[in-house]
Image (cartoon, rainbow, N blue to C red; front, side, top):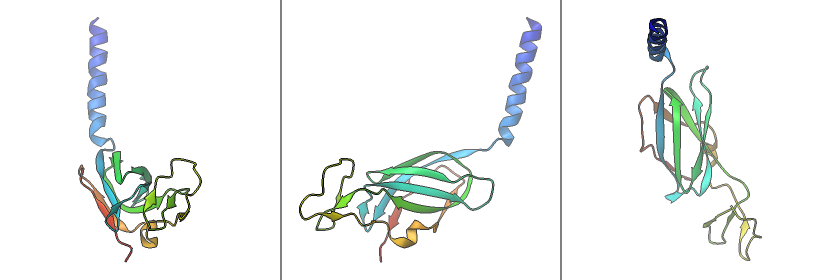
Amino acid sequence: MRVCCFAAGLMVLALAGCGSSALQSVKLAGTVHVDGKALNEGTLFFMPDKDGTSMIAVPIVDGKYTAYAVPIGTYKAKFSSLSGGRITADGGQVDSSSNAPTPPGGQAKKDPIPERYRQPSIPVDATVENLNLNFDLKSK
């Protein structure tokens, strides 16, 4: 019994020692707007500034995103909209989750994300948790 307790104690100490050198992470959350309107759906990519950290892709739904366990570091954000949706004749976004045909007056969806934001462009400091990391993309 003493041997088991001693072994268990050593494991706890070993794990505690590893915790300080383990990769730490933060939670990032917020909104994505294009010209003041919430982005219906898309993907937010956090592209690492240094080698050794993986890119993180986070879904955007109804203009909101949440990224759990983002490794601490600095990133550049880039954005992508999902294909297959439609916009109305007056420029409003239509939900693309249905496979219904394009209604009269509608047209094939143009990408609502301005070109410059489709490349890693916005610096992101992921060294502390940030639940209000909002992106307001401007087309002009």
